[in-house]
Length: 106
Ligand code: FES
Image (cartoon, rainbow, N blue to C red; front, side):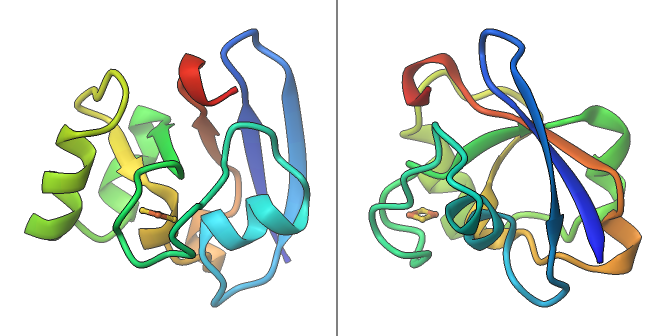
């Protein structure tokens, strides 16, 4: 199992065990993480799964496709470490991944 830590905008932290092969968004939904609604179910059409990825993990995650970058541009307060959690697949290499949810999603 891979551990993923979610932090909301107030600093509340929750670490969960994620199943490899699922997305970080699916892991969040399974564990009732507030701030990740995933309204479109993972089809890159809503940005309600937007997270800020802790910088040290950015190189371990596949680069965002153009469609993801376009959707992030429409998200609340995008930053250079913004990603859509529905586009991050859980794997052993991401054990310890930490993501923060934007203020408006909490
Ligand atoms: Fe809608 Fe990720 S769940 S863009």
